[in-house]
Length: 105
Image (tube, rainbow, N blue to C red; front, top):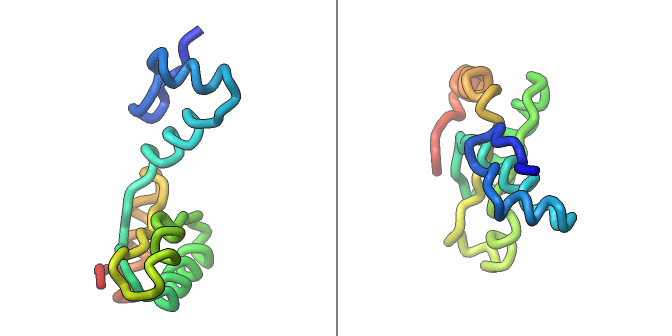
């Protein structure tokens, strides 16, 4: 039984095998593929502020690359990415633009 391709990132035999084995790979892949990156930053304080802005507006967000950023000892080589679902993209961009925070640093 094939896995439905709701996000344009799966639905093939490999993702079906992962899901049937309970590895959760397909869920992770679907979650990531259904999201867009809004901002890249090495500033953890700013990242927290941006997440608070979005949360206050009722927009859930995720931070990608947080673990690699922690491993590089704070030298700023790997920026963290703030991502939202594709369905929330326009609303999130509007919130960040209104706060004049829609830029990478």
